[in-house]
Amino acid sequence: MNLNTYINKLNLYIGNENGKQTSLLLSLDHGHVNVFLNQAVEACFHHIDSTCKNRLEAPWNEVASNHLKTLVHVDAGDYDEAFETQKELVQAFQRGMSNMTRWCLPALYIINNDLRIIASKADDEADMAIEGQRKKLEEAANVISKSFTYCITDRGVLSSSKKYGTYCMIGILFRIYFKLKQQNLCKNVLKAVKAADMPSIEQFSKSDRVTFRYYLGRLYFLEEDYVKAEHELDLAFKECTNQHIKNKELILQTLLPVKLMRGILPTKAIFKKFPRARRTYSGLATSIKIGDIKAFNVVLSDFESLLIRQGTYFAIEKAESIAIRQLFRKVYLVLGLNTRIPIQTFKKALEFEGMNVEIEEAEWMLANMIYKGYMKGYLSHEKMFLVLSKDNPFPPVAQVAQA
Image (cartoon, rainbow, N blue to C red; front, top):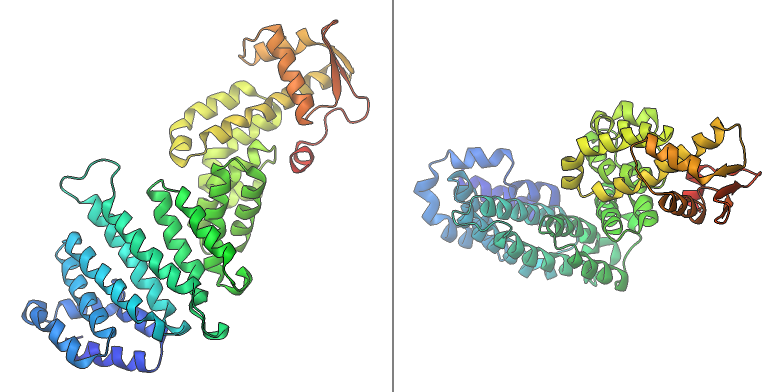
């Protein structure tokens, strides 16, 4: 596709307000890219600006010229220059957004997401990059946040409003903030959404809803609000289509630790369908279920580096209390449902599982189980006995977790 053909097509799609086709002509990953690059790009590179200026109205002249220059820079592997031209593309698009309606949103998504990708590559390939610094990605976030603002503050008629691009922009921003480990910035975005007069989230595309709920669930997870985290991640998992196995696996990376630490074990069907989840969590789930603390700690140690990398290690570590509860229940069952059990017996059970604890620590563990509701009864410190309730002394863990 030569320059004139490209401009003719772009003009046609803009005139028809065909957002989908316009977005493809502004994408870095479309059929026109290789065809354009093979059309003696160097010969016409210096004429791109003038040709676009003469053939296209603002802001599309700048949008098109910067897109074509970005293609050349990316093809040459010069991501620093590609970042600059892609940034100018997005900013030119933003300047014209006041005259556009909802039809422009597919293009808005493509150009902002491509800016994120180019920024990441530019940071990765920086010659003098300081570990942990991602200056281009931070700059990209500042530019993309303006796209978010243009969407959420649109005052046009709701049916054609750019507000319907809000959650799409949030998805790109949250992805950047998490990569930069600046999750605190997500709160500013959430405050803006709460304050805005927005359509119901159910009116947005399923992909936007899934992405938003996934990151919102991870935010709650970081804040240790595990009930809300589980709720959002559950919704994201259920709405994510079965064709997107990798995305569902990604959701499970946070969702399964939340469920395990709350004593809710994954089903066999989940492990059968998602092999990565099975490799990581099946051993942990089994050891929790049977109260095998020794096996739990072995598996936890084996997957320590992976879980730390995923940011879920400490949540999984908390699930040990569920395994201990199951061990205490086994003691109760082995002793023939005796409701008066010496604390020393529980101490010996813990020692058998490799936990060398003093009698006081065993007593504290029992007290903690009663406090959390995993056991019903009371401790006689004077006689060093646990006295269990005769009525359902070990309530179902999932039931306690939901309370």
